[in-house]
Length: 218
Length: 320
Image (cartoon, rainbow over all chains, first blue to last red; front, top):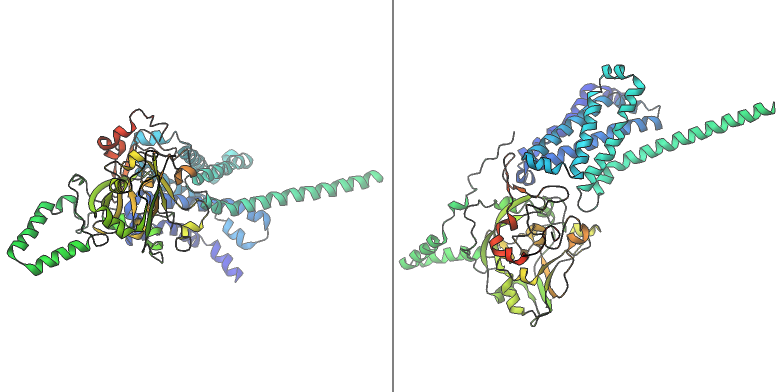
């Protein structure tokens, strides 16, 4: 059973299908003539793909802590193989989000005016970061920068996460309930990872100081 | 790509039979002595009224240059947080168990003749209803055009006779968390409250909506009686009112209490004062399709002539 799951998760076809599904779902409100969609299609799509992008981005950020917490899980490892595809597809949804936003606003002067607002600015800055991360996601870029430097650049993803959290939280009118739900799993995972890391360091330190003490006595 | 094409049943306002023609046709039927046909006509006419009272379009408020927002969209794209924060939610959830009938409205406070009566009796008492086409501009930068049925609030004010101390009117909506799932959330201090100055409330435009499109007010649009203040952002037009209170102090409206930086007491439609998160210079027309559906927002939503004098000398940037 587990073998089978690992096999499925390793398949590229499966992962591409899963990642394309939220995009295909946008056809549903068009076909079913959903009134909320008909009322203002651009707004409906803008919000929908924005949320999809956020969830995908949170998912890809959760992979590292999950791997650190359960290093031997084959299932996590099989999904983690595709982390680049996850990240890039999150960015694809972000590009759709931005495109729908530009269509929704429509007027250039208004877009310029809105760029002075923290709500839009945080989104724009997050987009900029994700653009850098996506364009440096190739093997060639890793080699070019060297792994350590490349990794340091890609840590900007955490800054993007904070910006996206803000961007999404402020647009909720009565308390950022949904945003907190979205980000809570990631926060818990990161907290657990950091705790594990600190504990490990402490025990290592204890072990090494004990061995030092033993050496002194000798 | 999504192409928004008008359905054959979506008539432009220009296609509506002018009232004079309509009336003369009735006269024609009568003159011919078509008793049965005449009776059938007036029956459907009565049927169109909110609670059995005839509704007539007030020729002063027709907005003939604008297309009405289709009934379907007006009744399925709603901000009614008592039921859901999702626009499509109220249509489903407000028609599940919530019964806005019978409905008692209380009018009290600094008035000579306080009243408390069934909404249907109240409509009878103010002398029936009329229809007016108004623009409605939401603070979220979208707009609709609606033929509302109801009566001017001024008629009710004349009835209860506020005393000299009365400066404000406070409106309170219902509180029923059992039937209104949104009210189980504690994010908002229920019930919903709104307020107007007495002179705003007595303005000729201020309207008590009891129906739309000649039909009883759908639950999701604020049945059975709601406020319609067309020159202010939509959230001022409180739905499903149970209490109207004349006060000497300005009431704190729900959205002002929640986000004072974003929503004020006046909340007049103003293209020059932007919301902290978006510009208010333009608006999206609901049902306008994917592209090209923004139009410029008008000062006081196009009602400057009627209400501009209320705010002379007031700093509208400060009192948003």
